[in-house]
Length: 122
Image (cartoon, rainbow, N blue to C red; front, side, top):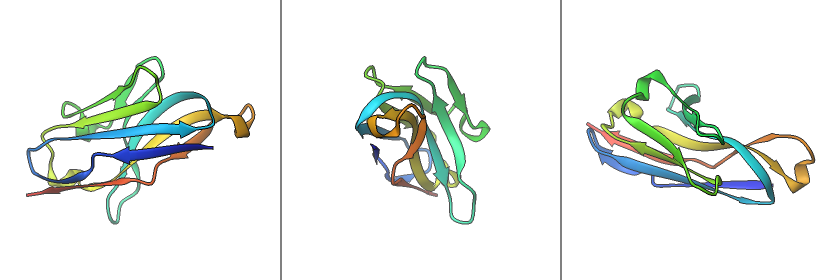
């Protein structure tokens, strides 16, 4: 199994910044892509940003120019630098990783963190 633990969420005023971190641990063979998703009350979970092992990134249109995803050199961590936060960014943010674990055989499996709350006040 692979465990993902997010940190860095909190309450911030509109226009402020937060940096989310996610660290993967466990019986990891390799991790491919990692990303951040978010879910606001009454809405579907949506992709915020994604980064491949090689560094290719994708962003939701709503966060382009404001959020930056990056990955640690060891490739088992992912970060989301959030700037110019808006109230509509309020959501639970979940870390996601596609990984192979020793107990998953040859299969790539999606793993999810438990989420961290980001609240942006107006």
